[in-house]
Image 1 (cartoon, one colour):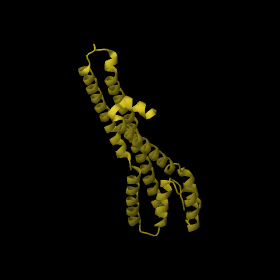
Image 2 (cartoon, helix red, strand yellow):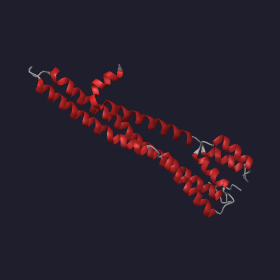
Image 3 (cartoon, helix red, strand yellow):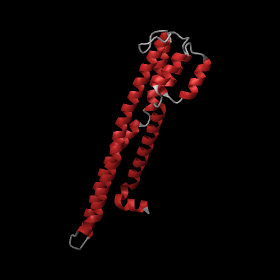
Image 4 (spheres, helix red, strand yellow):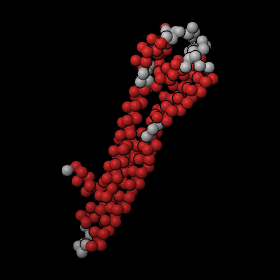
Length: 212
């Protein structure tokens, strides 16, 4: 019932626009859920936990890992602590590679989201052209005087497809930009905190307070 109505309104662009809408919705929901999960950790709580448990024992790591394992920040700090006996330069290189991998994972799908934002209006425009073609075909085969009813079908498809394309494109483009900014913020915070804890592992003052 609903699909038949959509097909009447969107014509040949029904399936392409539905696919764009589905892909956009899935990527937006997946990325938002993923970023919410990894960014919910309160940094100050973790600071206190680590400060109270120095030197860091394996039992402490396991306990903290159970509480914070979904946090990207904790994963980064856990990586540094696991390599605490490695030289500082090598530890920094390991952390840098890990951060690159995490950024790649977090931005997965965002380029496709931008693509949906670019393609959807073009599909809407194509639907507009097809609707106008249909309208002129109806006019060319009609022996009746031109009436609004004769123009309604082709113009309706033209307008509906344009609106549908824009309706899909706006959240896709806005979502892509906001998700990119969100990822940048998470990665900046994680990198900053990992730098602090890399110094902390060498006994250097962290956040203006002695952690020794």
